[in-house]
Length: 105
Image 1: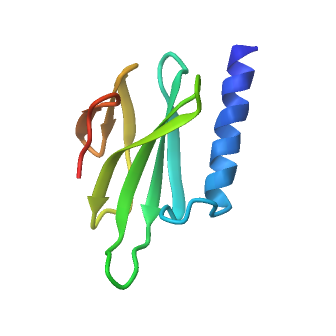
Image 2 (image 1 turned 135 degrees about the vertical axis):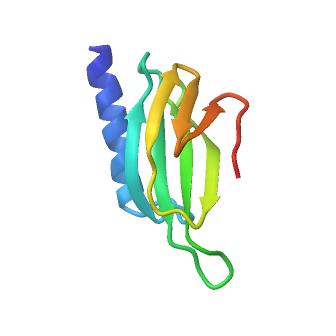
């Protein structure tokens, strides 16, 4: 039952992302569920505008309280590779980040 709930929440997050309901995150790239199933890393491609160039943004969604935290912003990238090291550490395009305190820009 817990896996079904996590899957449904993940699909809702992806659907909202693809609908364009988040103005600064233009295009969904991929998502990855943490080993325990508590977190989802969601990567977006921001296409930029007149003053900001294209970039990859990665958010961590806590599925227990549905809170979101941006941990990765990298300009001049268009793809994202996500790999969980453990339940609180994720590797994004070769950069290891602590999902609680880490931030990369």
